[in-house]
Length: 330
Image 1 (spheres, helix red, strand yellow):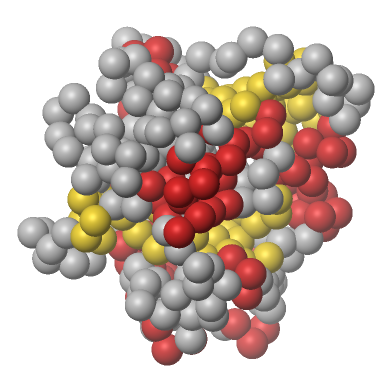
Image 2: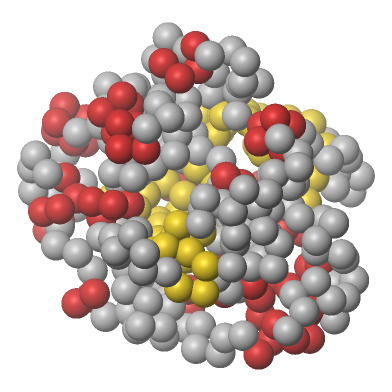
């Protein structure tokens, strides 16, 4: 199969059919592995927001829990959910540390309450929106998505959030707006990695408008049915499951609507390695390693599985790129 053919949208329909099967609860990890220092009292709902903030580095987005899993966005039973200890303990967040396993400790005292998102650019309703108020307005649900890092490792994660489309509709972008630009925070006093100003902080990313409006594109405020921990991008991050993970920007503070393709941090630093589109493509290697296979986190180091075009979401998203050269537009 030629993944880069202009007819890719016709071929990709054969990749996967069982996209709505429920993952049984038996495949989830024990709650105790998530918090380590305390037991999450699920039966008590929020169990008192002040208690949560006093004992755990939780995000501002405490509203909307517990969530319900949306069966439309579950994967087949063979794809076991990655253990929580890996999802929350193995994170790229260079603003805090270049060591994935050190991010959790470096970010644990970071304050993300209160938190608002500034909406600007080509919109009818520029505004500043509180994250908790957005959750109360839109509600949140749980979706199980594949997550594929450009570094050739992967996870299967139950994210909690709401479709980005709802926020876009609230902002009412002008017809001239073709792209959505996302901007993270810039606070080197709290995030030690940002003291290295050779990087063009703050972290920025962007999507084409049709990508942003796609039903799979999620604004994430939680994981495993709990508020998003700091190391995972609290209090709100993006999740675009058919793209490499660096596109799913963490800790979003600003969203701008524009008619120009936005610059993004990694694309600006190394355009030969990190393209603007960053669609998962096993036939387009990173200049320094193959993208044909990936290692599921939690498995043995040499235990790899084939990478799927568009990370397994070709049936849903390949039509967005009809006629495009997917090697040139990597």
